[in-house]
Length: 131
Length: 281
Image (cartoon, rainbow over all chains, first blue to last red; front, side):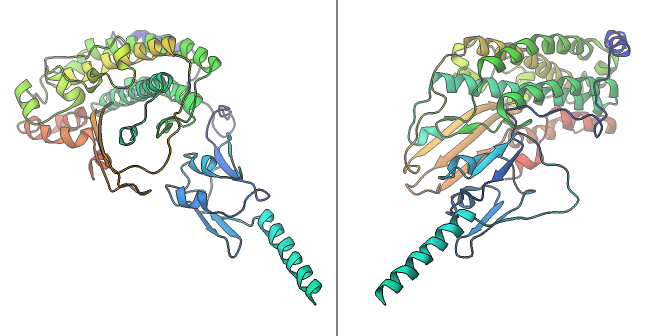
């Protein structure tokens, strides 16, 4: 016990080592890996992220233009951010808040939808021109 | 993995990997020392160690992004860099952490309660440890000078590294080895940060893993970690084998446990730092 005494005395006269968590929250570091955010206006549904994700947290369906992301499976390894050819995935330094259920984030690529729309229009225009 | 191609690593990559490996070792040993105190009911020391560990975790989070597992290694390099600002913060924090660790380690070394629960408990002799294939702190606590860092992988060849050896072979010796390694780890971090060379952090690696085999041994906090990889030219590896240190250390319980008292069993089992989920593969 005598060897522990200096530490104990020091603790008596210094502040708390802990925080009153829900009231007082420490800001995450700028470099921290909080969570990933998907930018629907840049995504092309190429499926590179779904293929490389080590924890199968992303599934993509190019036909239906649908992407599902399971946030609780994500380990924030940053692989998808690096493989994305169109920079549609961003890493945010803020942590995801605690949850009561297991949500699924559904995304639809607005870029792909837009591209398809314009392709359809071009096709229609070409058909009309033929007629 | 780089040995499959093979890819030459830049000096900065090697130093960064060493720094993060040593940070991981420091937090792992702090966790273990805390758990050891917890195993025989010394709760205040347990929380003191974990309090220091929290600060080490903050340093890892600030530099690498994640808290416990840095997860920065990619094939050919590392994903994150330590810039001048972060280097300064880390270098400022490390001497304080070292000072606090020293104060607490004095308790581990000298305290009557710690000694009465660990000295002469779970003894493994030098020969037994060698024959049972122990690795890491368990082997070094029995007096064998064996450390994979002596093979000078990464930047260890350029740092002043000397393995820590104790001769007791009991739980007390294993605690001492880990305590002294903790201080040494902080020293190595400071030295590596001061020597950190400039350069690229990741080399470009092209193509799939070629048809080749590679093995690599590294010194994880618990002991020798062994990796075997075999590529076949496609994007998937043909075979990957990982042997974790607990797999080697677990048989030593056969020697330690017989004849011991029941209250000593948690201390003895803990003294090899078992990680059953790592071992089960």
